[in-house]
Length: 348
Ligand code: ATP
Ligand code: MG
Ligand code: FE
Image (cartoon, rainbow, N blue to C red; front, side, top):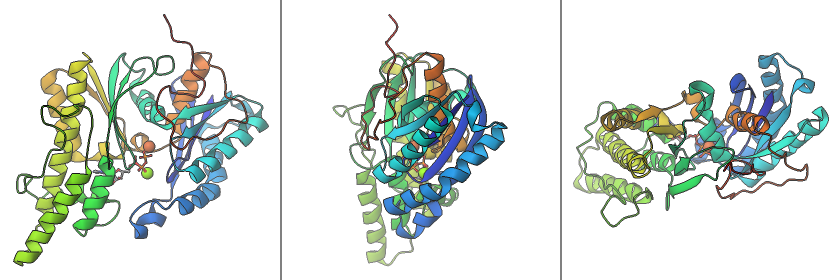
């Protein structure tokens, strides 16, 4: 049984996984405390992790019906993420591993997001394309054996993440934080074709896997300003629907392109933005048309959580990976190369 700890952003998560089975999944979020600032405040997040850590771990152990001493290993997110937030999780995880006398594994946050899907849908098909879309990430990955092979980072956003774009545009439209759910709700009665928002980086010579969302924020601001100058009523629903359409179109187009280019039959979409109704619908529609299997985990496993870190830890333990030393450090800008700090030798 592996306990996974996640604290890279504003969620304190603890999960327990045994042989691919989810035994406990507990998350405390400080999201509400950041709402009035319109984004995550690092100091507030760190303090919230300190307060939530022990109760969240206790709750996870009780959900699984086990004592600390029954664990086989502890896995923890070592990066990327907010430095202070990561520090709290790592210090806590080291203490637990030392106390229980079990090995510690350092896990890359994005590998955790990838592994989340295995908890509901079983082992990852090899290879698969994974689209991670959250408030902090917009990444397209090509995954072979998650804990043995290097993860191929196909592309990323050059500026804002997709969730960040939803949050910022929501603010411009006068909708509450977090913006994603607010825009999703407002878009229901809007016309997605009302405004021709740009589709950044989708032209012929553009990097097929890179994303850019900061231009959408500017386009939305200009749209609001034009209405104001003309004294016209702002149709928030149309703005929300058109923005959502632009983001969903670009995300799914590039994800499917990646599947096609690499001859991959499975697309996995994870992260908070995977909750978006239009992103889901368009992904389903385009995957079905291309004969590609789409896997999207339930929302509580899509957003940051400890269970996904435990899922990677469980794979590492079962593959006989070396644990991390107890003096391991966090890496707030950890590049995605391997799922863990101590990769396994690749199979021939
Ligand atoms: P990280 O980037 O480290 O994963 P995070 O906290 O920024 O952390 P998540 O918790 O995965 O990311 O997701 C939060 C983001 O998802 C926010 O930007 C939020 O606006 C967005 N989001 C949530 N629901 C929806 C939705 N229905 N439509 C669009 N975006 C959504
Ligand atoms: Mg979050
Ligand atoms: Fe995340």
